[in-house]
Length: 299
Image (cartoon, rainbow, N blue to C red):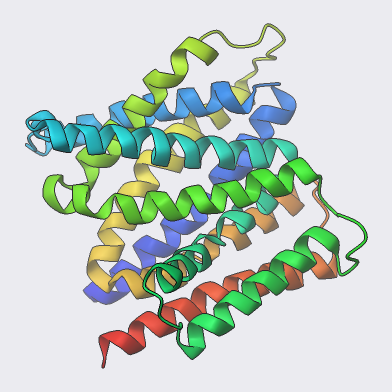
């Protein structure tokens, strides 16, 4: 198998596993009565430790990011405003709606990013980006109203948290680039997860008293942390390094589709025709943005 095909396979597997991890989170919140806050804290803490251990085993300078005050400050900003916020808003959206809706709304983040850059640079976006903005807005409209502007098909809280998740994901994706280029992805993301998890401990350290622990629940919990974070993260990074960011972003569209299908099969979530159309429109916006980026690379 060629390196390009291996890369595509790694990214595709990672995206599918990420989609399944959202379903695990929904199961834990619905059936074990775990709050989004406690689950976010636990996921961040354990995942951060795993990623830092991977970095240490690879011989990376684990504490190098703290050698300069400026770099450490940027890491703390990224940890609290990026990693913590994107994880917490995503899981709260799932708690208020379902895994598929939470994942799809978070996929609005590429549109948020290109719109923000167009506004700050005072430059009109290209044809593909304009089309992406329109399709993402149309997709969101269908997803949350089913075509009827006088009613919402999801709760207002789910919509607000979902849009907040998209903005948080946009910040997470853009702010971290400098840190990652200087210190490496494993260390930056590992430390940011660990710091974010520790910062939540004063508020969510003790779980709720009515948690119903069972074997399937424990499996889902460790699957979410180990497979849904550490394994998928490593696979995606490896794949993206082999095929490039544009192709990786296109293949990552398998994540919301996986979440939607598994929610339908395992959790009994029903998706109507407007839901599917809205999902496809939002995913189309990601493809259009990727096409725009590819076109600029070839200019």
